[in-house]
Length: 124
Image (cartoon, rainbow, N blue to C red):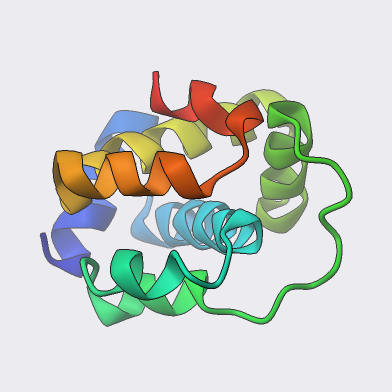
């Protein structure tokens, strides 16, 4: 899946008004997700994505992740995106839905193994 298709699918699913808003939501979600991944999982996942998306997963950890709960994940996405937690949750779920499609079932299973179990609901 290409970058533009990824953004368009997230925009439609999250019912965002513009590509710019969508790119912000995608960047916030993937950057936060990247902070939760161990370094061993990053190369396999990033190889399955367009560079414009993969680069957000490779950012240096900010050190802001102090809790591995789903609520903490959504709060961090919201801070990065500049939206409330309800919006952040909806946007993160849309990004994760499209990410699942982009990386395929094998990629999803690999990603699930590399993330804390508290984040499993992102894949439901």
